[in-house]
Each structure stands twice: as C-alpha cells, then as structure tokens.
Length: 245
Image (cartoon, rainbow, N blue to C red):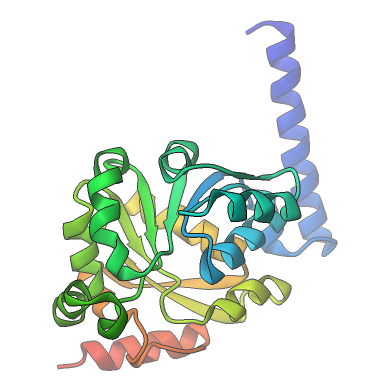
C-alpha cells in the first residue's frame, strides 16, 4: 500500500475511534455511530418515498428520487440538499445499494416488466400496500396469499424485504426525532438484505423487528394486528399470538 493509501486508512480509523469515544461519553446517540452512508434509490416519490428519503438524507445517506414525474422529483431533490438527486426509475435502481419501492400495488406488475431484470440481485425494500378498490386484481391476490409472497413472485431474483407497510407516511417523517421508540415490523428471507434493511430502518428512527420470512408479509399491511404504531415489545407479543397454535 502506498503512503496515500496508508494515510486514508489512518483517517478512517481515527474517525471510527472518535465516533466511538463520543458515543461512550454520551455526546452522540448510539445509533449515530453505526451509520454507514449508503446510496438509496427511491421508486415512487409520493408521501412514503419522500418522507423516508428525507429522513435518510438527514442520516447522511445519498438518495435518488424517481417516479413518473421527473420535474417533481427534481424540485424535491433541490429542496433536500446536496445528498439528494433525481432520475429515472432505471437510474435509481442502478444508483442504490438498496432500492425502496413505494408505489401503488397496482403499479407493480408494470414496474416488474420494465425493471424486473435490473432488480435481479438487488436489495429491494417493498413498501407497497395492496388496496383492491384502487389496485384491482393484483391486490386481491396479494391479500389472499400475502403481499410478501406476491411481491416476490412479481420481482423474481430481487432480494426482497417487506417493511414500512404498517405505519402512516406522516410518522415516517418524524420518527427520526425520537429514535428507537417505535417498532417497525419487517419480513424477508435474505440475510444480507435483512441486515441492510435493519440499518436503514434504524437510520430513520424506528427499531426493526424481524417477524419472519416473506410468508409473514401477509401481516404487514393495513387492517392486520400489526398495523399502526407499536413498541418493539408489543410487536413481538402480537407476532407470538399470531404464530400460536
């Protein structure tokens, strides 16, 4: 390794040591020390996508917003500072270490046709909820067999985690102000995807609670016992009752 490489390594180690010292002294909250900056592509920049994207930017991540309305996304990015940008959905997929999909569930089949191959092997956080009156037959299917399994069928090869489905968008924008108090139930099968999703959930102020594999995604939508705001302990109690024989 050349001298510049050694110096860079030393700087990284010094930064980590300084952060650890600050946490130990109480000068920083514990969750601040473990933030490793990531790039996140957001597909769907409505209430959920913009709320989460804004909180991730506050945590130090870079976010690319995308939707069918690029002008809106550019305005949103401009309002959020240098770590925000706008692009097409395909660009957002290529940009992100993780991709958040926050679109109406009825849009997923078309999105899968246009981006399915690009999403293969990518870590995808599915925040889409099925409402039959709005989303049609695909929502009925998701309600019957569970949104986790249905989303996995629509996006084969994606490293899918289901999260941000049980709490309203307004709360997603404010949880970062009092981190760790509210639980965020999540479901997934891929260990690395789950690990990154947990980090990103903590970075917007929630405490992640893994409730099981994607088959448990049937409980991660409005109208289920897990819907609404719960503490992490309450989520675990609800899940235990759901799994009881």
